[in-house]
Length: 177
Figure 1 (cartoon, rainbow, N blue to C red):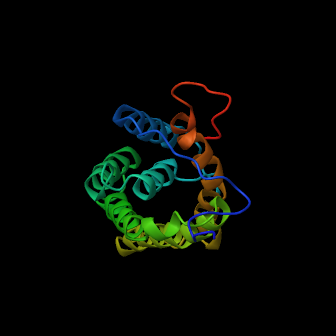
Figure 2 (cartoon, helix red, strand yellow):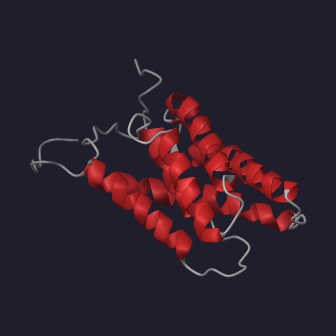
């Protein structure tokens, strides 16, 4: 009998524990990617939000709402935005990801991306509402392409960020895991 957690088409993997320094490096690299001068490109994803949600889903006890808030303050300072705009959006995004983390991990990576899309849209909408509350005009519907690009990058981010945990400690050709 196959339990709901097992799939008849793909094997289950036992992952190695993630190193705390790896989480810190990935969050720092995501922050540095956000610092790049992308200009006014429409569909550039928020890499900090993407990596933050990934770690919230996979390791909610290591990366929580406090980390999200601090990264949001750093993004506010970088973008010279209203102080707390990104912090509020990232904190709400992390809360949503942490509250859904057990359910989301049951699905395939493509279905996980569909679950992440509403979270990314809500976080972007909160950030937009804060900006509009202080007098910024509505940037248009194309503004929300950022969330779509983040959801499309979810499978790539999952493959990249889980890669160090998938390696075998000692290689054995007869072991299926």
